[in-house]
Amino acid sequence: KNLNKFGSIKIIRLPTFPRGNSNLSLILNYSSFLLSSIIFSLRFIIKSNFDKIIVFGTSPPSGLLVAHIIRIFKRVPIYYWILDLWPETLLGLGISKKNFFYIILKKFMEYSYKNCQYIFCQSRSIENLIRKKINNSKKTIYFPSWSEDLPFNKKKNINKLIDKKYFNIMFTGNVGEAQDFNSIVKAAKILKKQNIKWIIVGTGRFIKELKVLISREKIESNFIFLGSQEKKYINYIISFSDCLLITLKNTLIFSKTVPGKLSNYMISKKPIVGMISGDTKKIINLSKCGLCCNAGNYLKLSQNILILKKKSKKETIKLGKNGYKYAKKFFNREKLFQKFEKLLLN
View (cartoon, helix red, strand yellow):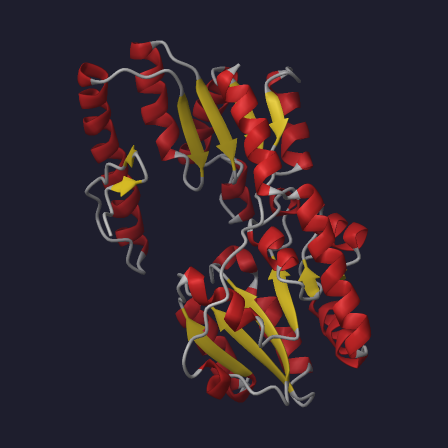
């Protein structure tokens, strides 16, 4: 498998410092990527020609700086797809508006929003926010994360790790501070005698702290950690769950965010239990694919889990199908790509 090619697309991988688990290694990871990308962008400017620049806006938005360097020299437009809203994401993580880094990033993002051809917004709330920032409704496009039709590949020993006699709540994805595992652990403690297992698929910077929290509350037997898994096995692993868990911390900015995994949760035909505010809660309630409470409300989360646990097989299948239908209609990959291509080729 050629890691430097995707079909006919050439992939250039930049040398970066390993991400690691410490704050220092994370800073070195971000800064080394930024430095490498600036150096490589100069090579692109000299040796290559471009028609458009597409920026996939994950955290932090370091790719945007390079995009602007190329835009200025090559006079080509930027198409920016926002997944995380910056610098507001920093507020959600407890950083002050007076912080020097926040002020600099705020200025840069204001400049970026005004100098992008189109801004693709992952949620309606983010779209409304950006429109107000730039005072231009023609630049912003609602463009959610699409659901992926992943294969159903069996993986050895999963059936030995997950026992179907329990009510299995599964969380997949990044185990970070933003996912509010403090509240999840509080809910797990309330439900510790309810024949429930919490299955964590994935890893992240909060994983060690999470295991310490679980140990402190003496609920180790209620949790199963499966670590990072290849995409090709995710559908099979999810099939062992009774419901899927989606959470984000109780902050204003996170209420405007719709995690990318929501559409994949919905396409899996499993009921969803959420502890998340704003747009995600609206989607879960509107689609009738599960039960959702506000971010941080671990008491209501535990109550909703018990309600879901008592539902019949027929009722839970209906919830799963509702999510699937909604995802097929609103998070359809082909339709979203057609919309994107139309704007790109215009």
